[in-house]
Image 1 (cartoon, helix red, strand yellow):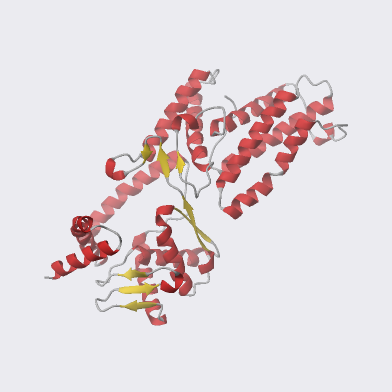
Image 2: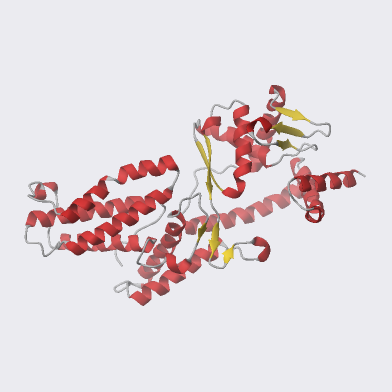
Amino acid sequence: MRFDKEYKAEIQSLIDSGKTEEEAKKQAPILLEAQEMLRKWEAGDPETVALWKQMNDWVYAGFEQTYATMGVAFDRYYYESDTYLLGKDIVAEGLEKGVFTQRADGSVWVDLSDEGLDEKLVLRGDGTSVYITQDMGTCDLKYRDYGIDKSVYVVGNEQDYHFDVLFKIMRKLGRPYGEGLYHLSYGMVDLPTGKMKSREGTVVDADDLMQEMIETARQHTEELGKIDGFDAEQAEELYRMLGLGALKYFLLKVDPKKRMLFNPQESIEFQGNTGPFIQYAHARIASILRKAAQLGLSFEAAQWENLAEVQEPEQRLIGLLNAYKKRLKQAGQEYSPAIIAQYLFDLAKEYNRFYAELPIFSEENPQAQAFRVALSAQTAKTIRAGMQLLGINVPERM
């Protein structure tokens, strides 16, 4: 009888959330089984907890491998298993403050209709938590650990509603960090073949994609003959740097709020607005600086401070170099790495123009020569710093 009642209630809940009756009937039994497992897990059932730990170990081992390849590291992990109890305490607090209400079946809800939303479940009738319960706990835990006044959640735009609800709840509860909660909502990524859909098996595995990019970089670089003088280990490192750089840059150069189309072949090109184009510009400058060192050329300020005239290509490059901090500030204010990416592309492009229009080593005026080497060094430094902010390494030679 109880199962039948819960089954019907779950079907109605799914229909209310926008599912068709057929979809609701198909999903309800699975969700009820999952809820039963959650009840056992929260009750500390040994068999359920052991299975959960084993599956967690598998998942996190896979995550670590993917993150290591991607060059991503975290200072701290927050596990839902550590935050759901804190979330339940917050639910109890909300009931005392009148922010939440409890229904006859024991479930707890928040009414956000005055915020332009609707009612939202924060705790099930059987006492088990939902995502919002755990996320409330995580909010408080991060504040306890770091005393944050700003917290940015980098999550896809499919979760816009969830975070809107979460942030409004924490503000209703009067949290000191409530106004500083921000959802950096990014658009989804499409493939040339269309939108990725898990049900149709068209979702791309991150590990497979990264390996594919490294292989694409290998083929493209070998075809262009850009590994002359590299041993096997150095060549592999270059392929990896170019492949991952191409992937990251292509994803980050688009405003995070916009949906985008990822084209692996286009992303690896050495011409156009790509990561390898900027990486190659850095490698070119590094080569110039090595040659300057071999020739014993000094480019300290004392060598060119009395330079009579600064040429137009030099002026353009100086102007762009001076804009770096301003662009960084803008990127931070707008939560957009795309601003940094565009700046780096503009800088690499402007340097190539400077290099094509003005001689360096054939320049007869030693002050002008030292000045151009110094400009080259500053450009390389800026490219390297900007690309590191995007999580991308740059090669010293290609």
